[in-house]
Image (cartoon, rainbow, N blue to C red; front, side):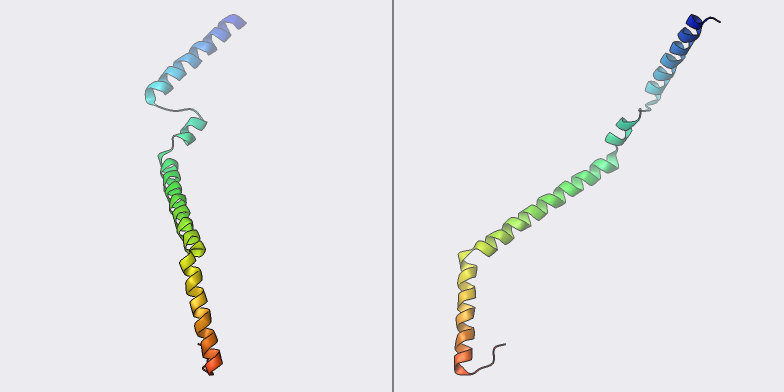
Length: 91
């Protein structure tokens, strides 16, 4: 067998194996990891969790920067001050 025939035989075998692999649905290398359903499901779950955490942070920021919260804190401070002036213990 000369080198040309050997190369031709190897190419034919590669072509045949590629067709068989395609017919059987076997994917090559990194594509298998990209299309992995458990990984996609995990990514979707984590995206949802991040979205929920961002919404909670927005609510907390709103509470902290809310003027009503500041007013409530000032009222509590005044109550504490009145208790101290009248001699009651602060709880």
